[in-house]
Image 1 (tube, rainbow, N blue to C red):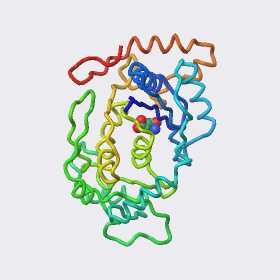
Image 2: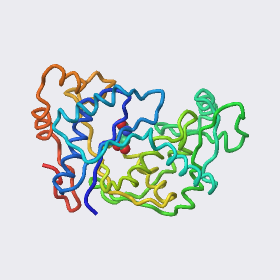
Image 3: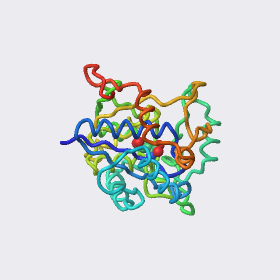
Length: 285
Ligand code: GLU
């Protein structure tokens, strides 16, 4: 199968240099292998996605000199596909409805206070026991322990980390369908990577933990497992991550100020540390 990579931004804001570096990696790895590079807009969050960001994102990618194959896939057009997958998980009794509010979950966690120090608290499983409130819209959560038991031992190959044993358990009963959207990030991204034939998922190391959940969902839904490349995140001179919330310059600001996007992409390529390929051979210049 020809190598297929993707860049999958959420149109909840404008792209910054860290996004550019990730997109360049995914683009260049595919092109070096004679493969395909896809762009997918992850716009399933109705509260945070903005159509105007989509146009800006695509203009930014063109400005960087990145070209992609085929039409851009918008996750908002795929809601029935995600709903069908959720139906399968529901039929297998691997998900349950949850009507807890954020405040209720926070209060429950604070009251139990059993989470070991330094470990992010997980959903305490309230709606496993109580009947969900019929007056409220429900989210759907994965029954993590049962899902792990059904799937059995799993691993995946990470270009940087090598063979990784999937260990999604510590993330608890993750949300697979939100009360305001028929899919969560975990469900939509896992299904789309499979349906689009993505062979190599190239994304920031901040999403490494999510891959434990994605590997489990692949097993439950009978989907193939791509290779993963979790790359380091770009940091600023102060060592802090270049993210939207840190006030890093948006690509659109640079573009509209007349900066040369292909020159910027060349500069970024020169600073990207190579991803270690199996056997230690760098797979990026
Ligand atoms: N849509 C996600 C984001 O913008 C990235 C998804 C992924 O690469 O798996 O953070």
